[in-house]
Length: 95
Image (cartoon, rainbow, N blue to C red; front, side, top):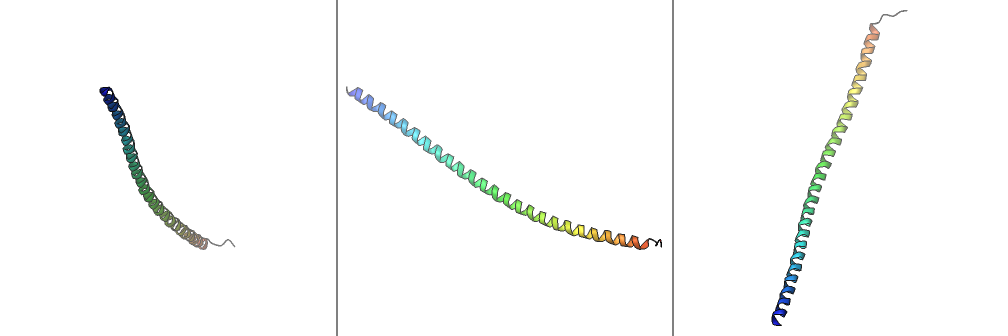
């Protein structure tokens, strides 16, 4: 009877150790997953900050280009007017 009780106790102990190992594995996996998730979130935050900076630079460049474009258009209009005035003066009157 003692061997049977000892055998049963050993089986219960092995079962408990198995449950403990499974629980510790789940906990370690969850910690790794949490750490990986935290790392991924940090990387996404870095990417977001970089993209926001690039967007700000692009918006500033667009503003400068639009301003330059308006200035060039104004200068071209002025040049066209000047050329038309010069050409108009060189035409003899038909009166």
